[in-house]
Amino acid sequence: MFNYLRFRYRRQVRRIRRDTRILRKWATNYVNRHIWGKWHQINLVRRFLTLWWLVMAIGLIGLWQGIGGLRRAAGIAVPVPGGIYTEAAVGTVQTLNPVLPESTAASDVNRLIFSGLTRYNSRRQLIPDLAESWAITPDGKSYTFHLRKGVKWHDGVPFTSADVAFTLTAIQNPDSRSPLASSWQGVKVEVKDDSTVVFVLPQPLNSFLDSTTVGIVPRHLLENVEPSQLREASFNQHPIGTGPFQIKTFAPSAREIELTANPRYHLGKPKLDEFDFKFYDTSAQALVAYAQHQVTSPGRVEPQLDPTSRHEAQLIDHHLTLPEEQTLFFATNDPLLKDKALRQILSRSLDRQQILQHAAGDQGTDVSQPLLPGQIGYTNRYAPAPLNTAAARQALTDAGWSQGKAGAVRTKDGAKLQLKLVTLEGGELERAAREVKRQWAGLGIQLTIVTADSTELQQTYMRPRNFQMLLYGVNLGSDPDVYSYWHSSQAKDPGVNLSGYNSADTDRALETARIKSDPAIREAKYDAFLKTWNTDAPAAVLYQSGYVYGVRDSVDGILAHRLVVPSDRYYGVEHWTVRQRFVPAR
Image (cartoon, rainbow, N blue to C red; front, side, top):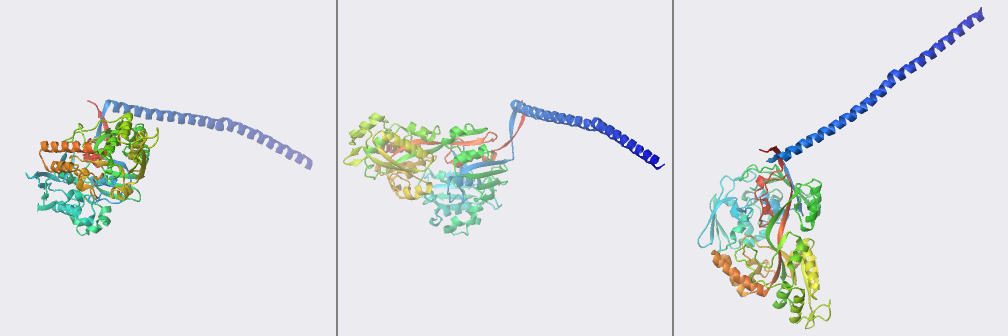
């Protein structure tokens, strides 16, 4: 009986195991066929759908851009207010005060924060700014300015004639050490009322109005600062002006300055929300910053970068002019250069077009006179004819400078024709100097070039007149009053008669030309000056500088064309825009 029961048990167990195997096999087949298989199909469908939606998204984006392109092609770009304009500047700025301009970059920022009594328009003409109008007495010695009413400083305090008088006093005070003091020497100021101020000159001066573009500073914030402490005043880092923009962030360590629109600006609130500056060591770095979309403008496009800038996307170059001449000054009291005949040959032997091309490319015009075309009294009829290489060699030989063999340095009475030229390091002036050296080497003249940075050039060479030749740029301004550069009274520092030129005929001509208002008399006097200057050749004028200002093509409203100083490019900045929308063309 026991064996029978054991048999029945084992048979039942085998049946259960068999059924279990069958059920497991069936379940496995079912899952593989109806679950995992379907899921795999779902994955395939999902991948297909994802790819399909991606293609659709790309198509829609392309369609949207195409429609936008068609709208732009068929529409008109309309400037709209708002946005931030960021300009790259080369150098650093530590002080913001128009009474104490420290650099070109600082003058640019000052122009946006402060306003003068007058300003220059795009045609290099003086127009009212803080002044509404002015009148000049018949003797040319008294200038009465009537100021705009309702003008306020950025802090809300009303602007008055007392601020104008304070600014002039600060400039004239020797303790302030303002570089503008010579322009206001001997000028007296009288405050008639809150909106009327009178300047009285010791003698007539046709170019006086040019000085009235200087930015006015607020009396209420600076009157308690000792003039000797003006350079250290906290105001210089937190300036308050009346210009189109006011300070938002001044961060020299971060190399940036942020300005925000002045809602009280007397010519209307600017359309830009902000005007910012980012500072770089070189123009090349500024151009890289533009390429990386860090700035709206690379600022001035230096001549050596002009070819590179032409390949930058959406960069528009504005070609502007400056009344600035790059001039090779001869130290007329030097043992070699006191020889007028030698100075004549040196000047006439220079190929100015080649110098311009090597130094500034197409950013300039070759000129040879100390006045510019278009200025009253300009003429080139006294300019000596240039000498080609063969003629220059013969002229040197005729003047007693002999050359033993080709390539040798010329000599005369045992003295070698060896000259030394000092100029600003880097940039176009150094390139110009090297081209002068190359040209003169072919004549048997040995030229040594010494370069220095701006501070060293001023302090070590220019101010003490410690040079034999100096290659430097001078700005002639809008009025052809070149008294400061060529009158004998300006031969010593702080004057800027850098050649030490001394001519009684020139002195008389310049003295009369600057005080007479009759254009015919002025023209006659400048004609006499040019005749004498070309005979004496105290310097060799090489070329007139240009100025290329690069901006992104979305920028609208730039009006500048003929500048007096680089910051004049901001004329009409209150109308500049960086944003635009497209509307259908009608």
